[in-house]
Structures are given as structure tokens and as C-alpha cells.
Image (cartoon, rainbow, N blue to C red):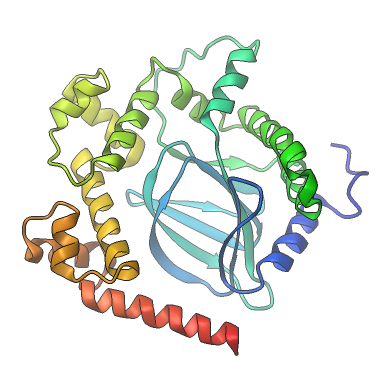
Length: 310
């Protein structure tokens, strides 16, 4: 890698840029579509999240993602990649006010991946094993340098529409050359199970409030029910019903938190017929009853706002 274009190492540039743009703990979208920065200043227990098809890079510190009871640890030498929309729990392992955990998220564009795969001279993969929808990859100098170039474009706002798409395409190319290539290729293979499960997830996200008939969903993506169940769990670490329940509970949480709906109304709106069943399943997922959880979230938000204004 030619580093003469950088007055400092790509990693140091990332740390400097992220720290300058995210002064307080939290997540911050950037003007470049699909790019976000994050900052954490102390270790934290796992929190529920939905991870989109994306790459998560750590410039400083250490994080861990829990999916289906399995932990995926990543830091400055290892990146996290997800090829599907996966419910998970995100945890901060190493961070402090003096050395905060800093990093970026980069949303994958499956159309760009498919185009690059089609343009590649490499023969189609013969690998039949279905990989999980999440993995840990090795951060190479080329990957790091391409991300540093993308972040550097933030200093030239007028250049973002022209230069950012070119560098984003390069990043996808570098990822296809990484040790996570097979995981990304399987989700773009239109005749493969990864692609079909991705289509099923898209349907579930749009229709989470409807009764779920797994056999019909399997037929919709042209798979037998047994094969659909097997690959769905392999890729997401959940059954289709568990995935739908996760979507429902998180949407209900959003309705109560952001739209101030009461527990019963939120439960009915996302497809529950019994508020008591909703409360039990909500408590199991989030660790607290709905009212207590929402009150705690609002209290935390108010504390952060007060700290920032103070």
C-alpha cells in the first residue's frame, strides 16, 4: 500500500476524524450515504440492536456482537461483517473517556457487490456450505486505506457526490478480496439459499404485524419448508417466528418511546392479541417490563441531553 498520500497512518487519520466529529458518546450519521461514526467512553453490557448488511470497523477500542449466543469480537485488527439484517446484542469491551472506543459503520450495497462479482474473472464458487450471516474479517492495509480515503472526503463536502461513490465501490471490491469474500458472495447468488432468505427477511420486515405462515413464506422464496427452516436458522440464529417476534417487540418499543403510545395500543398495533403475553415477551427480550423500560430509556436520554447542554 502506498501511504505517501497520508500525512499520518490511515488508522490514526480515522481516529482523529471520528473523534473530531463525534464529541459525545453515541452514533452519528455522516454526510456520505451509508457511513456512520460512533463513540463509546466506557465498557457497556450488551444492548439489543438490528444490524444491517454492513461492515463495522473499530479505529480504537474493542467491541463484541452477540448473535444466537455466539460472541464475535472485533477491534483494530478485525472487522465485523454482516450480510443480512440480523437481530443481535452489541457490547463495548474496551473504552474510557481518555481512550474512547471509536469506529465507523459502512452499509453494504448488494447491487455493487453483485456487479463486481459479475465483472470478476474468478470462477463461481463451488462451496455448498451455507455460512452464517455474520463473521469476523482481517483488517488489511488496503481495506484500511480505502476507508481512510472515504473519511478524508468529508473534509471536501462539495466533492462527496463525485468521489464518495468511487471510493465506496473500491471498498466493496476490497471486501470481496478479503477473507470474508465467500460470505458476501453467497448473499448475492440469486440461486443460493442466502439470497432467498434475504428476500424472506425483506418480506417479514414489511409484514411483521401479519400472522406468519412459514410454509407460505417458504413457498414465496421457492424453498421447501424444511430447507427454509434450516437455512433461516443457519443464517440468522433464529427461527422465522422468533425473528418476527423480535421485529414486533422492537417496533412496539419505538411506538412507546417516540410516539408515546401506551402498552396495550402498541401491543395491538404490532400484531399481539394479548397485552399480557406482549409484556412477558417484552420483559424477556429487554430485561424490564415495558413501562419501566421506556421510563429508563427516557431518563437516560434526558441525562445525556443535560450533560451535553451543561
